[in-house]
Each structure stands twice: as structure tokens, then as C-alpha cells.
Amino acid sequence: MLSEEDFALFTRWRVGAFGRKLREICEDEAFDDMTFEDKIGACIDAELEARDSRKIDKAVRAARFKIKGACVEDIYYLPDRNLTRDRIAGLASCAWVEARENLVIISESGGGKSCIAQALGVAACRSLMSVRYARLNDMFREINVARGEGRVYDALDRFSKPDLLILDDFFTTPIENPLNAVG
Image (cartoon, rainbow, N blue to C red; front, side, top):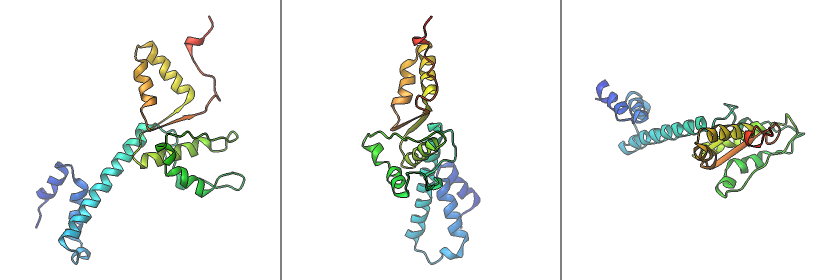
């Protein structure tokens, strides 16, 4: 029988999900009919799922989305939108990101462009791709501040390195650029 100290080792060894699943298997009689290999396989699957979940959470945080809960499952397919579940499912597969293609979402103001773009960004994070979301004006502001601090290449890297760059509010607000100011 495994002791509490034994189970604590799984956390110390950074395989906590494996240990939690093992504890569940040991305590639940429903698992008694499983083979040893099936039990170990279930523990390994639990650990892999937990690690992927942490990677996705980290990618979503790094993307800096404004709509925290955006996801393709919550997109509304209203009759007046030229939007179908098949189209969104195709875009959510992220094949266009892997092919280095661009996507432009065009709609009237308030049409849900930002929500759809961020939901597709979350889909890319779920595919373990790196994503960066920014309003166009904020991107230029960050680059200009970095230019003034002598770190412009660092700022450019933050926007050029991700697999997917989502630029929102494209030319809907004035671009602040002190280098172009007349004075």
C-alpha cells in the first residue's frame, strides 16, 4: 500500500497529475478489473493532459487577449452574419497559420471581429502555437517606447516571433508615432 509520503513524492517529482490519478485508481474499486498496464497508461494520460493544459494556459496568458474567455465554441452564428460553423471549424484548425497565410476579418463596427479573432487565437494556443494579440495602436506605442529606450529590436521580436500575430482595431484609432510628428 502506498503511503502519503509516497504520494507526496509525485508532487515533488513534478508529476502531480500522475500521482493524483494513481491515488484515484488505488481508492476506487471500479479500477480493480484493469490490468497493471492499463492503470499505468491512465496515469500517464492524466499527466500528459495536465502538462498540455498548463502549456495552453501559459500560451493564452502570453498572448495577452483582452477577452479572457473567447473560444470558438461560444461564437454566435446569427442569421445576419456571413459566418458558418464549418468556416470557423476550418479556421480553428489553424492550417492557415501553419501555411503562413493571413486572415482579415471584415465586418461593421460591433460585428464581433475582436471576439472571433481572439477565439481563433485561443484555438491556435490549443494547438500549442505561440500567439500575440495587440491593438495596432498599442503595438506602435510599445515599439516607440522601446525605440526611445534603445530596445527597439526586443520590441520587434515580441511581435515577429509568435506563430500568429493578431492585430486588432486596424487603423480605427490614430497611430501615435512621435517620429512622424510635425513640430
